[in-house]
Image (cartoon, rainbow, N blue to C red; front, side, top):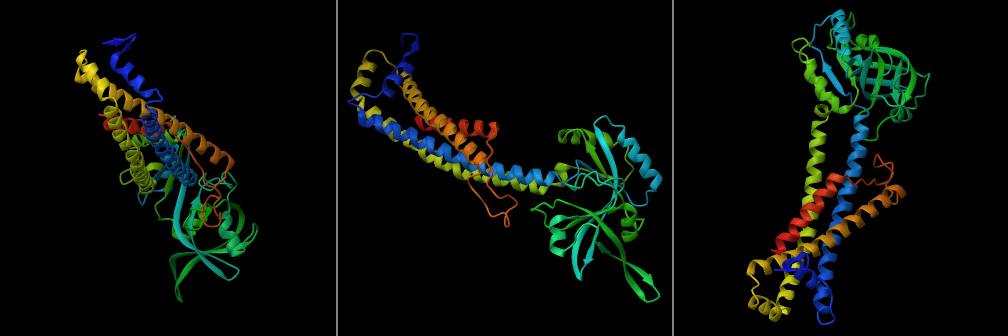
Amino acid sequence: MSAGTLPFSLALALRYLRSTRKDAFVSFLSIVAAAGIGLGVAALVLALAALTGMQQALTGEILARTPAVEIQLPPGLERAAVEALAESIGRDPQVTSVQQALSGNGWIVAAGRVAPVALTGFAGTVPTQFPGAAGQVSGLYLGDREAARLGIAPASIVTIASPKPTLTPFGPQPRTVNLRVAGLFRSGKSEQQARAALPIDRAEQLFGADRPRRLFVGVTTLEAAAAVEGRLAAILPAGARVSTWKELNRPLFFALRLEKSVMFVAVSLIVAVAALALIADLSLIAANKRREIGLLVAMGGSQATLRAAFCWLGAMLGALGTFAGAVFGSLVAVVLDRARLIRMPGDVYFLDYLPFAVPVGDLAVIVAVTLAWALACSW
């Protein structure tokens, strides 16, 4: 059976969807069911948008201080071999820079104060992992937050100490170098340890020339890091280890994915409860239309046709609530993000406001899951 150009089941669903004076209470319940789904979807969109915004801000801050590709060279490799390897890696079309580095932990001593610091010795200019000082000439660079805490300013002379001792006639003594602070870089509020960058020859004095070196490899895009890693395997010496930005931050990315998944499941229960209201609404419609349904069966309407009509009706109510909630939640998220209405204490968090981001993929998953709940409850 068909009604005009529409299938009969769809036409019947549209008729039940329209409000009449006789079925005003049923129509009210339908509006309540659709509104409940819409509010649940809006809440889910806002919750995931806030979480995604925070995660994107945190990820961006960490990636700004992480090399795209890092190569840990084996010990005992001569300096000439390291330079030849760096030159060979630089010929890759997707490699933009190769920089030697030497890493270790130590202490910074200034104005009678001592603080632990992660040291990175670099060759050439300051690496990109030190925002605000990247590309500057060789010298000692400290984080602005650590410098403020220790009362250090550019041009100050500080002492850097290494845990590796030097044997003297008076016994083991710590290795130290005195350096003038060439400048400051922007410390990330999410950093757990103070950092400092210094020339690689000074790092060798602190940690020893036999310490294994690293190569910081810059690539054209972050997505190209995996392809570059695969090609490097053929030219690296035995014992070398290559890590991309994903592998260097694997625990963090896993924690962020887990957090987002748990948040999605928890908040989506609101949508599931709202979708269950469709069962009561459609049952009331079926009871209210018992005589009409009986006449349709007597006229040849099959059970499958009537079932399809109620599935269409539930799908339309669910779709109305879903898309209205998705649009409302997205608009509110955009307004909150651009106006920065939700402020946070900057001395506690690494941001002074709560950012919102609504990826299209997340929105599509929310809409698909909600429509699936609505169809299941309608069935």
